[in-house]
Length: 56
Image (cartoon, rainbow, N blue to C red):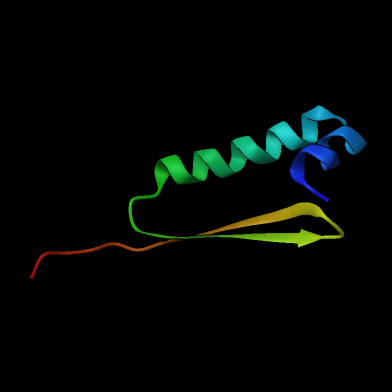
């Protein structure tokens, strides 16, 4: 099921909130990874691993 289909099923607000959470994490992150955990087609967790780089 696509994100738009999920939004139609559960209402637009949870999907908007999930998208905004991912966008906020991307905006704050310079180096690292964002892991999305999905259960039964729904985003349930966002993990952000930030890396700090120091010049030699």
